[in-house]
Image (cartoon, rainbow, N blue to C red; front, side, top):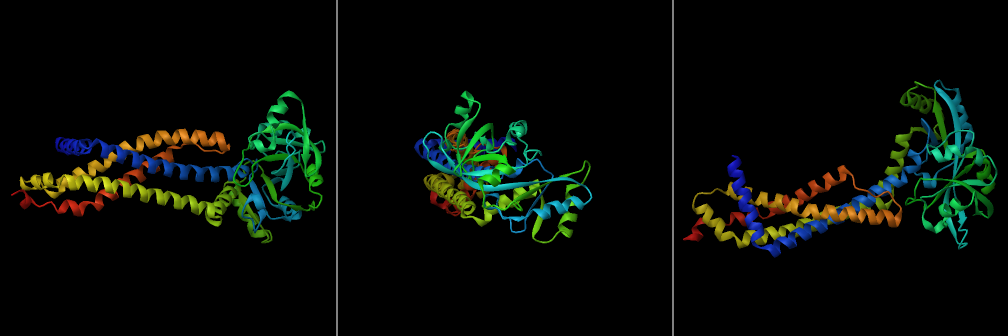
Length: 388
């Protein structure tokens, strides 16, 4: 059995390498389709990862948000009273409000203004998982002080470089003179190019029109051993329906669903993968169809001396699998380089994953096998009578 399989594989390989130019075109075409698919999937994954980074960075067990919540980048307000009502439920240990708003940041060097996402939190509590933020909570207790996200886009100015040479960096936020007293790393996203964290007092000073009783996110810490799912259900059943209670993972999934289903961005990336797949199928089909056409007399001869249609089908399938490997390898290598370039240029979390590399490999295999199946009709036209 293995010997027969080796013989068909050897025949498939020889047919491919007989026309080296055609083989090179096939490999380049498949690699190009793979690169496009990797690019679409990579940018889509970076969209989801960067957009859900704020949710995953919160140091909390449960999250309380408005029942109309869809995205943290356009969050709806709800009454602060709802958050403190949760303290009356068994298993809840402490709560903390989180304010979110877009501010106008002035680049300290160019003086240009850029929108930035501002988080306001009670500095006496731990709201984020960032060690740098928790180490500088005492600094935030001073009015008009902020922590700057050093993974923000360069449009906000060389804040990290300036901060290395002086204890504080001064600039303006919403027309108010503020001081940068520390750095942290969150990262830019499709919804915000930069981020700062400040105290709730400073936040309300920066946004004077924002009512203190209206908050965007409520952080709920549970007592040790408490079951988050069970308490979330209890809170949902007993609180008014103007709010909803989520675990941090559910909070992130709501954000992901918003970008994937509500905005056109998720649809565009999905459509891009489909188009690239169809392009790959068309390329491989042309190559295999031309190969079958050229070798039709040889296939007729093989049928005449007793080889079955099944044998020839196996040869074509092995050609498809060989093209899969030959086209995937360069596509994968080039995509690794493109990911690094894109990550450096956009400061977005674009990187290769085992799951994505395996997905693209199987898509490449499907691409080649579908193309091969489309040429079977041409293979069946090989008639042993044509030999005589």
